[in-house]
Image (cartoon, rainbow, N blue to C red; front, side, top):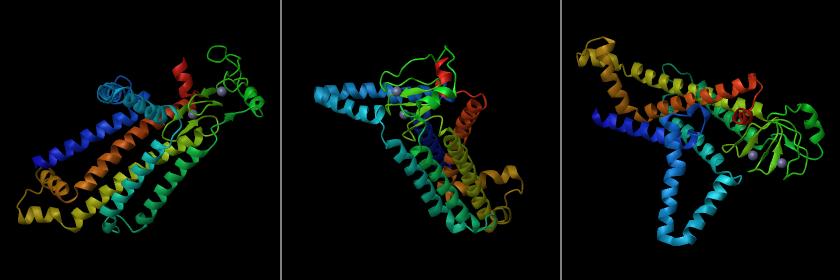
Length: 305
Ligand SMILES: [Zn+2]
Ligand SMILES: [Zn+2]
């Protein structure tokens, strides 16, 4: 039993570190340990690492690391897009490998083999649409349309020209230094999408968040039902009460059932924990953005006020 708990703790710690590294800068984590871990992983540890490289390899080593950092963090690049595809691909692959042999099962019909594939495909499609759609790039030939869309408030937005694009800056737009373009109703630059989120693709971005939230919930419940089906089909409760003479009450049975699940289906349990945590993150992020939409504000404006 203690080995199982060690495995579960290991899984949870890994999950916390991955979540902190990838999402720790999100506004919902402000002031929490998650953002402190994020700061350490992305800044503190990195500074020590740079010093170490400088001491061992000298300036050439440090410059190489700095140019890699410039490419990864200050230039548009597909690293996070590839990580997203790897995460969704690997998760689905593991689900197929570990759980499809039990579908159809006691609680799940065969349709979930195809429905799950379709759900993942729609998720990837929404990702691609958000990644490769125009966020509302302001150019010389469309600037007049964007100028008339929103009035200047003379608080955050005053009438001025973008020094890089050399065109007037419409109210609510921002010059994205990563993409090197002005974007109308700029929300934020999304590293996961390798694209800005603005006037024209906020709706796809929101659909992406909502869909992936639902996808994680679907995955968690479906695997839960696979495991419940296994318990039923193998008559685990019957075996425990009749052959092992365990009391037929939830309190007495629960530890044995949990132990059996951790023994026979540990991968599925970890998948459920993973998707459960990710669904909570997505719910928070979706709620934050849906609230911005309802109040007609952008992340950029919240940060500017
Ligand atoms: Zn610009
Ligand atoms: Zn951008």
